[in-house]
Image 1 (cartoon, rainbow, N blue to C red):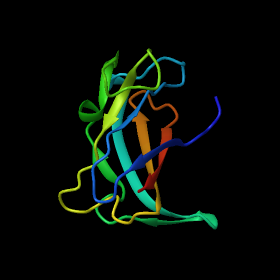
Image 2: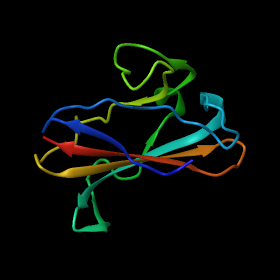
Image 3: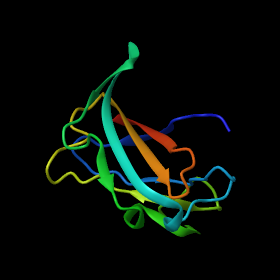
Length: 132
């Protein structure tokens, strides 16, 4: 498998639903019971220096409950348009205390880290969101 950001767009000062199909080390879709913890971090990206990222306050190393963002079976509904297989991860970042997509024309990386219950490798995936 090759590492690649999941690309998307979000309107300025609006919400976004981030969805993915997440697999574990064995190549099987993860379930709630497979994951001990989930964290996410949103960062403003400097396009001229990909290593320079500025954490977005209120979205920096935030903990999420696996049961709130994972499904035990692949979901297929009108929100998922990538394919007919489905998704098992869905998160809508909370904007109530801190705006995540505040400035049009910026790029935001939203990185998730899922720690398996079996002590295996941490699963990392990212969304690269262009704010319009």
